[in-house]
Image 1 (tube, rainbow, N blue to C red):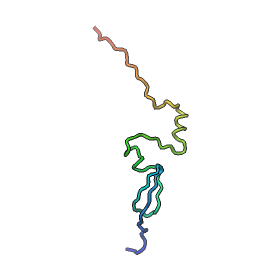
Image 2 (image 1 turned 180 degrees about the horizontal axis):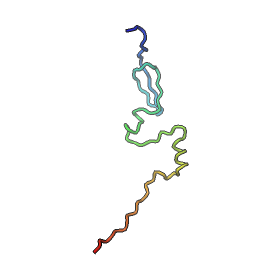
Image 3 (image 1 turned 90 degrees about the horizontal axis):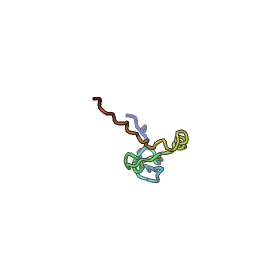
Image 4 (image 1 turned 135 degrees about the vertical axis):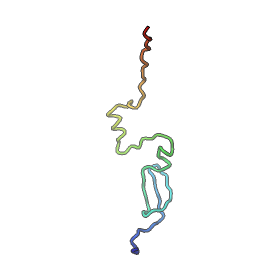
Length: 83
């Protein structure tokens, strides 16, 4: 194997957009992420829109604010059996 071709493996600080900071090891000393395990909906169980560049707002203005509201389904009129 060749010597001195691998990058240095150092302690790294990971900073999330939600403010959570934790330590790990990586080849990069400082890592900035948008979503981490403390704010991701899969781990928290809460749905949250991650709005990058106003995409959610643009979608809601295009399709209306009540796009996600459940529409009430009307029950079909009951049919009498033929005799």
